[in-house]
Image 1: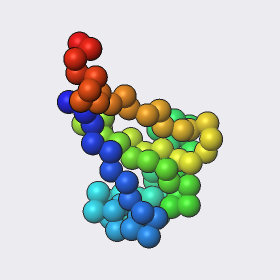
Image 2 (image 1 turned 90 degrees about the vertical axis):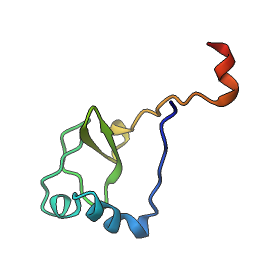
Image 3 (image 1 turned 90 degrees about the horizontal axis):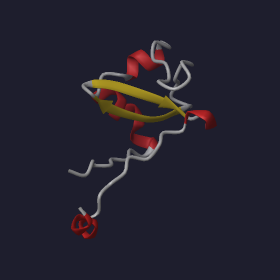
Length: 80
C-alpha cells in the first residue's frame, strides 16, 4: 500500500505541531533530530514521520535530509 504524503504550509506549522503534541516540546528545546541529535526548532524543522509506532522528527540541516519513501504507482503494479 502506498504511503500518503502530507504537506503543511509554513503558516500552519505551529497549528500542526500543536495538534500532534510537539509544539511545546519543540519550543522548550526537548525535541532532537532523529538523524543528528541536534535540537529541532521551529526555524529548522523539516519533517516528521511515524515509523513502527514511534515519531521521528528531522531538522533542515543538509546532512539530515529525509530519504524519500518509495511509492508504487498504479502502472507499476503489473511488474510484480
